[in-house]
Image (cartoon, rainbow, N blue to C red):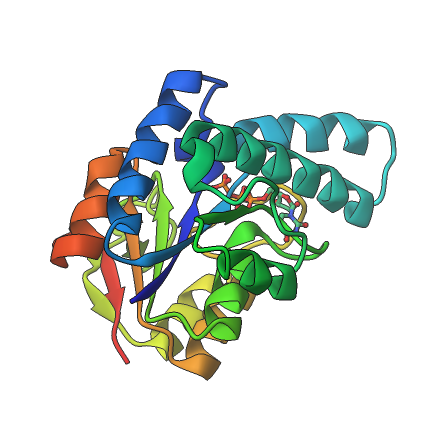
Length: 224
Ligand code: UTP
């Protein structure tokens, strides 16, 4: 199967730690033994720090986004280094390049592509473009909740339809560096192309392996 994995910066680079990149690289390699794998790396706290600095310098939101994209690409490059010869050596900057890169048989790792979205949307559009069988969105939150999980009374949902996902995430804020379980654009893409999707807590990379290889996870499954 063709698998697209969005690995949030909150788990890939909570701090800059080569060992952590190494752990994700090992998990990705395990999956890539059986499946064709594309990875989209997030920016995390480091991206938000950069965005805050440029925003304080009176940059507009599009420029803040471009700074965020650069950080996601840096994280993609670090993950490529951790994957070594198994990875395509440079992060593609668009979907066509990503597809071409995959023809080498190597693992393709990319970051952001355009302002106004997050790497969740990149992963969903990539999954649509290459007709992936599975999209995995791995973050530090263990699934999709009825409202912000910080709110009292928020309930985790084990299985939801793409329409429910769209309804939930549409309430989130759209701003460079904003945090929500999923970018609304990603949810709309999942809805229109009926992409099988799992949203899970990937802070332990083994849980991503278990979800893809064995179908076992404690996250939220978007049912078609
Ligand atoms: P992320 O995808 O990392 O955002 O992109 P995130 O939702 O904060 O995810 P985590 O924390 O990594 O899990 C970081 C920022 O880069 C810009 C946006 O400003 C985003 O908030 N970005 C990223 C884009 O503008 N376009 C892209 O295609 C990707």
